[in-house]
Length: 327
Image 1 (tube, rainbow, N blue to C red):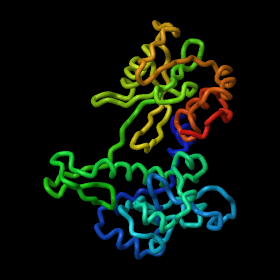
Image 2: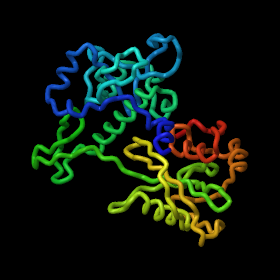
Image 3: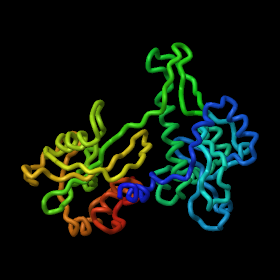
Image 4: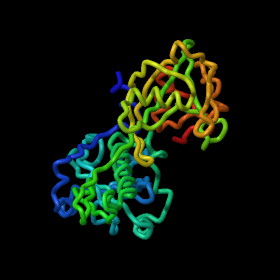
């Protein structure tokens, strides 16, 4: 059941063999640049270059990553080996090597000055193919990690990139650092009337609501994090956390782990205590109330796991509402 739910989430889709055994080859990029099959995903400021209409083999307007031959790419700041394409429905055959390249401002503008051709993952998540969505999420997560881990955490020396973009090593103390992902729980709480609890974050506009979420702390299980985070944010005790599925959220480096949970029998549903710092307002919604609110309440965007969890509970897609495209 969990896997069936996960495969419907836009950013949990993938069709790339990450080919980890090839990463340790120090001459891998030389070999890939000499391989006519290699294709490169160009990224700039968190956005990927998208194929123009004339580059779509099928002639449609469905967004696709622009997969470039290496000789079309200007000098890049960082390259990451993503793996081998597994998509048997694209123009690139199965086994095509895929590389992500981070470009600076001048190189990106030289490659494609039309900024409308550069798009964010949030914009494209629901419309890209499985391969392109997975490759974009993989590349963005790794590039965000490199950006925040430029120096050795032990001695502070600037570190160097190794293993085809998958590790960093300190030239002074020799310590090796691997990519990090921060696990977070996101929870669909129901009460005895099968209503769900949604909250409004302090950083959002007043009419925007979503499921409650929080990061897992060191030495804590996912289930314990569900119970702790929900109490801290709502003042309510929940029970029976059940895992639904997960989705990477590389903004910058989270893994969202979706759970359902029930309001504890000893808790009154009206005893809501938003923490006042992160969560300013809490509301219970029945299914009918949620359906009726889509014209006035901003709900999670279609790229998020929160949207998928709400639609699973609702039993139907959520009708587009105000600002609904946002993640």
